[in-house]
Length: 523
Ligand SMILES: NC(=O)c1ccc[n+]([C@@H]2O[C@H](COP(=O)([O-])OP(=O)(O)OC[C@H]3O[C@@H](n4cnc5c(N)ncnc54)[C@H](O)[C@@H]3O)[C@@H](O)[C@H]2O)c1
Image 1: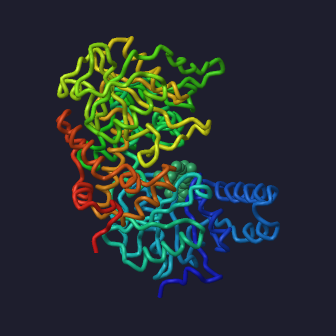
Image 2: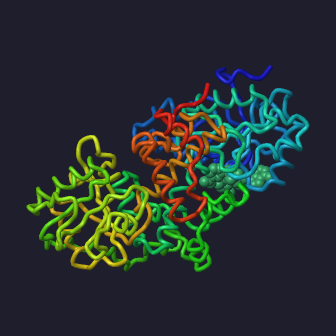
Image 3: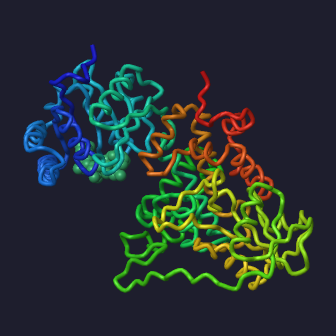
């Protein structure tokens, strides 16, 4: 019989006591689980034990755990020097080097040592759990147990069912993850599991926007923080993670899915990686982190308002809000079917670009500017982006020109939408602005993870909010923005670009057409 995960006497083994192994050891010990720590490098496990006890002592100093808690957790951590010393463990968690052959060899060795019901769990991020298990005598006892760094703070663990994993093994790992104080979600053994798969949309689409010359990376970051509510912009995130880590992950997932266009990496990242501009760790990434680096401040908004404004009626509910904004700034609003000769023309594309809206509506491209109404026009029920700036201003607004918009008309539109104190980014023409297209990719990939039955819909959102720190999971984001809106954005982008990257997932299409939540699993 498999061990009772809830028992007071539970004992687990951890093999590999680097960044991940020691974090897992800490949360296990804090959950009153006896932990046997082993590392192939002489002295590494003892060193890791000291580090974990030091971390626990700091928590006690700060009053986050009691003195008794510190003593009890420390007493649970034991160093062992031979793999044979792990014989009494009910589960062994492997957190060694990310190499398939080395992991396989370790599991084969462990099988000759451990008890019949001992679980073998791997913390691999990118290797197939099924292939690690396949060379074991009893592959059914092998499962994935994927934590995130730093383990004690990232309160999510993916329990990965390999093709050969027995259900009792994943059930036990789910219970073990929960006992350790983490949210444990179940995922199928697929490239990137849930979190690293779901994370593809954010940075790859941002890199495409940069590659198309649509906006400066700083503006993309500002829009994603201040209009879409992300804690960090995609380029800030790339600099934090380091391109030496993120670019290989982008390539690996893309190739494991046999060049699926939705995950296509960017030549911009490859070139910057080759140039050693990795991010914070090298002092220079997209941003400069050197001693003398100056943070360029955003240009002050122009103040010369348009003489009059005309707003497209394509989306009447948005047009009403935009007219109110113009009127509040004291600008005469034209209400005729067509604009007068001097009016600034405002269009409101959803998924499309300014040029297409302008031509379809017979407007003068020199006087036409688009505004992203899905994010940041800030009023009542239409409000979808929350200001992350915390400065009391509304969310950032994004304006988009045609290739022919005159600087005077561009600046007049900027002045009008900044007149109430809102921040404004002006970008070049693009299907889907910035936030629409990045969010549409995030939602679409989340939907396709659900479509592939990698995990239950609610678990996808839970894993993404905890694992990636997004303000909402991809499916809840789609619901908040409107599944039909996201479908429309993707269809329009697919139509304009011809790039299959934007083809909508069937999960999204069906739920949008039926008018139900994207979190709706099938029974
Ligand atoms: N660091 C992360 O952000 C992260 C996140 C999730 C998962 N992972 C995965 O966790 C695993 C460990 O990553 P890490 O960042 O802790 O690595 P690390 O380099 O910090 O630690 C690995 C440890 O394993 C030991 N080791 C290597 N081969 C061994 C063997 N054959 N037997 C016993 N010990 C051995 C090393 O001496 C080292 O102490 C990898 O599979 C990695 O992909 C890492």
